Length: 582
Image (cartoon, rainbow, N blue to C red; front, side, top):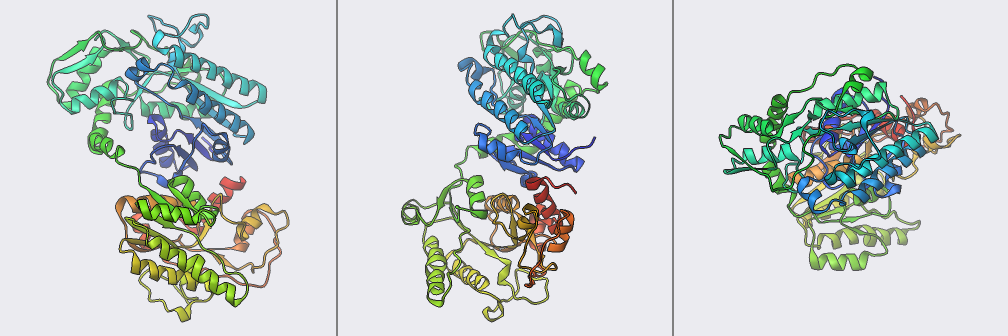
């Protein structure tokens, strides 16, 4: 299967997380979205997106080839009973925004994950052409089932009107690792697993033991999606499920056995329950996409329980309810600071709001200060001194006085002397050896942070690449038809991505890392190499820049995402932002 850049919308849900794991193992280029909590694995591949905001959706799909729509607001039976319409408006916005953005960004292929809730009530395995739009979905599914019918029609419209390749799955009850196990959002299997692992006694089960469901293990769903993407990406709805029904009584028995909980279940027939029988006929899937062996319920439950025990889902659940980290960020008007503010949230400090934000922060305090601002000096010695004292040293001093738990200062590899490397964090640096005002000022602020903030983290960063990075040499080469540069062709740069810096900051806060880290890639690339990749012939200047050899061994040991080479980083940026292929 040939894939370009894949985007998993809803990368923190049950299907989304397992899809990310599969794409990571396949070694393809991909990105995934999160909305509330970024997962701990593959963090550099995630970006925060609110798909209910169209501008964010458009930005997320820039340069994407394949889109897998897993994003949805879901609820368990209890919540659906209490508020049947809770998911209608957000799910309508999410899917419609994704389809329209995919059209505008010229995404090649789209997979929409629909639901078996589209079907009317039936007491037999139901086929795709059994759908009767003159009959409503089952009562409890009336809202979400009706919406699913409409979203399928929306897929038909975009495919027919604009020639888009859009595949549609109608899924049954999906379960497996990374499912929701909390009381408010869990579906029947994870809810039963949670209670069995907690050894609840009495063990009460909502509804009747005779209710029939069609449970499908999530890894089978991931495989089916990849097949659909490859072989039948067209608006022709296909059922995918285990294809055979199992009673809730049989499922309960299996879960209790796997969890080692010897107790007689008690069925509460007065509690909220859903449709009494739902099984999907998967004949069409087999005909179009070939046979796909399914994971048995017992084996699927065993794998899910093993994951839940290893991850300690109860502890994880408690951690999710902990207070959110309160950030105070500077430099949020542009560049890295703007990206960090969007991703981390918190209070953003700009030149315009600095007095009131600082006053508020001194009164209320914060958890983490991230100081990314730097004010370049104006021309002339007096203005240079003013910029040095007020905009840089003065602001750093004021931030150090804000009550905080951790101070993160964004420094630069320009603090190192222009001598043969590799330069590492434990190197003794003297001001007389630093070439340029920028490096001197960064080193001065480093010293101030070390003196005033006991729990400090200093990040000596190399050149940034990201959606908000300034139009420096690489962007000029990528964007301009006839690039003109002030630097020589042999000028060398060490590049890092905004998203990797942000991911490391999140990791460092979570693990309370301290000290100095070089945030850099392995090795450097020249401007002539970049020009060759994008098939441009720039007019070069006279100045030779050399980032020097920077050691990233310390940071790569704790955060492997920064083991990438500068070439890999630059290629990723050029592919994602400018659709260059390599």
